[in-house]
Image (cartoon, rainbow, N blue to C red; front, side, top):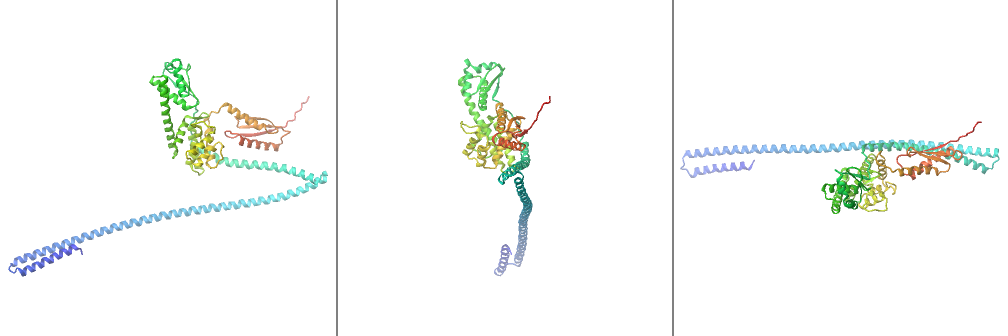
Length: 521
């Protein structure tokens, strides 16, 4: 029972005791007073009982609510435990299914290997049988040679060996060619699939960079202000920017000529500000050019930061970011270097993902593969080796450093992403309209191709046709046999592949023709 009820009952008992005591002490009180006291005592006792009952019911209700709350929390915990147990069971079931699948795959591979082993054993037995038959034929051939031709055993042996050597060489060459063609077909099929997917997903517009920029003027009168008295303004602009200004009869235009796009951009922006301001004199020109150069440096940094953010590349050194921004103002064979690097990076990421490798690392290497083309200082190193040196200097991953240095075969490829970067670089440069090849370089490549073929003995003439994608080799029929023609075609193709750099592929066709000509008179 609650302590409050005990207190109330004690009070009531004390009151009753007090009344009785008062009855005995104050005997003179009237009966009426006693009855009123008893009535009052009964009223207090009833109120105390009602209060105790109310308190009891409230406590019972609180206990029930607390019980319901605890029960709900317990059920919730039980449900959570059951859910977690169910998830664990599902994961275990999935792992079991995966393990079973792997076991089935392994068993399948084992069976396939056993079948291959059995096939190889049969082939070995067949080869042994052929070898036995060949030995018998050899012995028979020796006996015949000795009997018919009167040759010694050593002479007959030498003749037989030479005959067998030529036959084996022909068969080996044919088998080698067959194996190479089969491997090329299979490899080309998979490579073509990956390359086509990558190219289709990274289709990019191509623009050819020029070495001149046309600065448009509102009127031809401004030409005089730009030239200045005795040409001092134009000389000041050329000295400050390193750009040649060509002022000719072209209306409302001045041509800015320079192989450096960054200098042309500085000159263009500086001219634009000078013309807008109207104050054109040597001191003002130097001030504006210097201010434009600083602002362009900030723009270069902004371009680099925006590029790496868009490409999803993180943790790049600030100096490398600046170099990436500078690529916006560089070109290679007329192709904008930044666009080329972005496209190469996207191709690398897709190819790496298709091959199950790290796409972020490949994309990083693709973006940085040509950083050696925008050096701050001139150096004797090639752009690939210089780029690798810069990447190593600024703490790049060794795989990225190797991919940069090896994308033109100037370093040994030590990582899997290196050939990916090399292939993607070639794909980006080989897009129709991507690059503008100098005519002299093209002619030299065609000449080198023909000279490579004519260096072989027995070659009469060699012609590079279809823009250097096919090489026709004409041999002398009395010096080169049909067997030698196959061998020659193979050797020329291998030498072109190892010694020359070319886009796409080159088909080598060896032509051997014997003509007998007589005139009837």
